Image 1 (cartoon, rainbow, N blue to C red):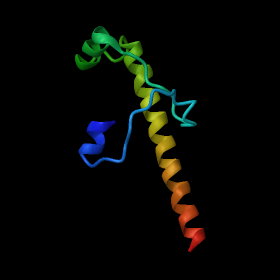
Image 2: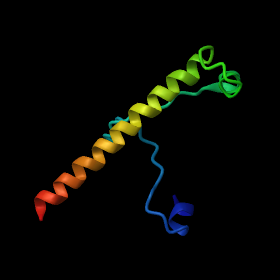
Image 3: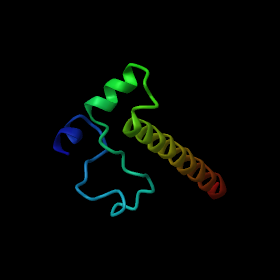
Length: 79
């Protein structure tokens, strides 16, 4: 966190889980070298952990977009 502050960033790293931080995202899973290699080689069907992690990332992106939309709507109603 000190390094992030020194770099002028507002982000910080927490030891708390996403749930404890009340973040609505699904935690990503460890894919591992075998699944990563299979995915890079184009064998996406065999890389089950990679597939699951890609679905989690897609879900989390939707959550991010919805949070931004809600924030914009709240800001517009406050004007």
